Length: 162
Image (cartoon, rainbow, N blue to C red; front, top):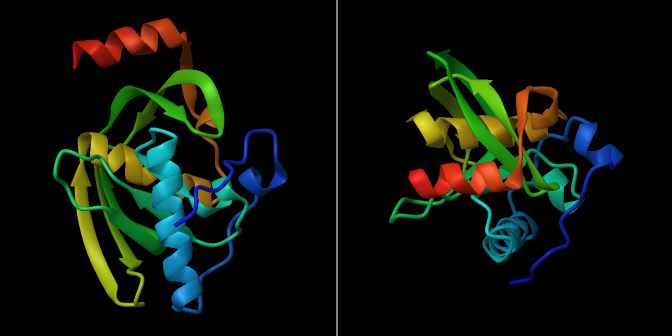
């Protein structure tokens, strides 16, 4: 597995909707594995293919704590509910944090690395991470949704409180 370079803002690939995945092959499996290695090396909880310079509808989320790694290929949001405001960051925007309003609940349909369709329901932090990554696939950046910017120090203080 390879740690890939993370694309930083500004870069056109980050604001361009990603292409649908049509080939579920070893190349896709390698991309998913490399994205996971890259995300872990960068201490992230999610990563979308455009963030490693690849315009494909592929994203991963891993909240750790014994939870399964979520691999989303061609994900679509089918339901949302509630709302909450929390602080977010992004690997493509080092040291930039802000409060973002997102749904508390999300239901998605996506394909796994073999092309099998699945549904997933998530709430709270997991839903937020999933929606953040799906936004990346649609060329939407979290900075477009920030209500209030937060300093890195304030972000770290909030992390320690949780």
